[in-house]
Image (cartoon, rainbow, N blue to C red; front, side, top):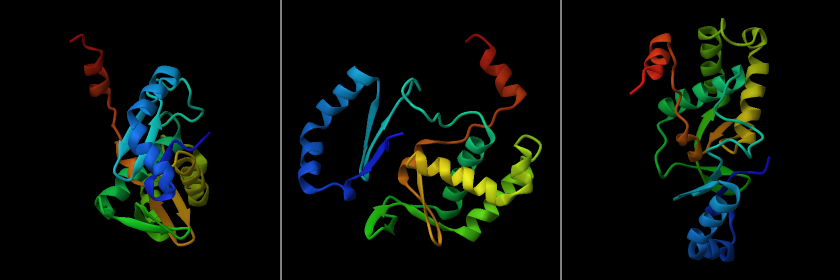
Length: 178
């Protein structure tokens, strides 16, 4: 999968200038030719596929790792409370994002594994390391987070995803014709 997100801080001046001048044309081209929506944010741009037809990695979606990743993002965002000005140094470049040290990430993942052990893969209850590896791998592939030696950087693009808890009542209400 290609990276769906690009930070302004990572672009050279000439590419920033093109993005600034030709943003509407680029958005139109991506929509007409690929069905992608270009989300332009202060920190960068994100191209996403609302239909899911082009993506090779559906998110959010079904599966224990995807559910755990979504819930981890939500709990860490609540705990860290990142602002629009939050930045983290990644490979010598100051990027927008919030930082969670590994002990904090592991505490959240352990709590999630305990809470959802009946619904998730057994290996996640048995091995926090496996859960962490699968979740971090997924978030990294989606350009929503980046693993550093001492913790996890959560990028602002992750804010577009909010977990939606489903219950038999909410499922039944969705089936009622409006």
